Length: 328
Figure 1 (cartoon, rainbow, N blue to C red):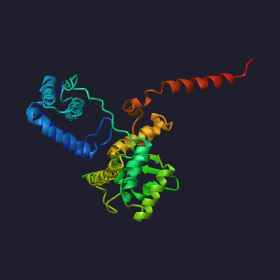
Figure 2: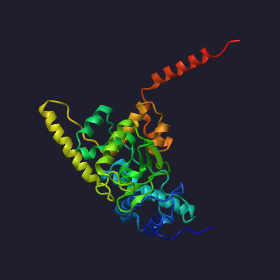
Figure 3: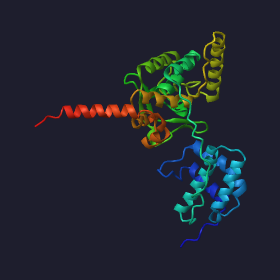
Figure 4: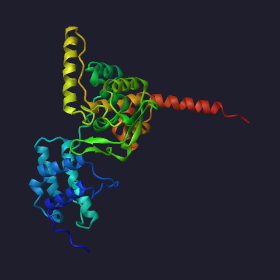
């Protein structure tokens, strides 16, 4: 039997982070870790884990040590999602060590973690999305319409090039994202590389964007310059200012005010709109770059209340099928 490693948790973390940054250590699916993921892991390890547990030998780390850390984070008022994020890099480190016979027991198994509150992200109905986006400055609208009607992630919108938008075939080819420090990177997952249909209403905005900017094939569609992506905080600032101006007029006219929304929430709205249009979650998953299993779990609430409709559609099919069967 191989002797357990004598590395401390800090030493093991340094080795893992260096390997992940060089793509020498891969995910369970065999792909390289995204730079933003590695940075997030490193930040959480250095801020929350290593100050308390870094001096522990990795092989001697116990579940009770990690549970005590989790309990301290709970008592400090951290959210359930944040605590799950803090534990994740430790899980990854321990799984990596087990795969290499450096430790015999995974101390992250059976931890008692707080349950997320299950808050659903905001979804904008079609008319609300239209009101929000049309209230924006003209040069900003196409970006938001593309998130709403094509479901691209923020990083994918930042890395989108003119050559990726085929207005003759009405398809967006998603093949890259944009990392804040690394620049162009592969999409978030294997399913992230995909072809997304362009509806006619979005095609109009993309065509106007192309004519307004006059950018070449390799230029960024929504960049602040041809080769420089937009800054998310600046886009958010412009949107909030525009919505506040619109709401000032609405208050004077005693109209319902617009509720601000984010690019990610607009993408979330795309899923809801596509489902309402009759597309299955599996097919929507292909367009937004998620696995069908993830879609079914994350958007299960979209299926709620559709039981009667499903029963009626199924019964209509059965009636049709039986009536069309020839009798002997």
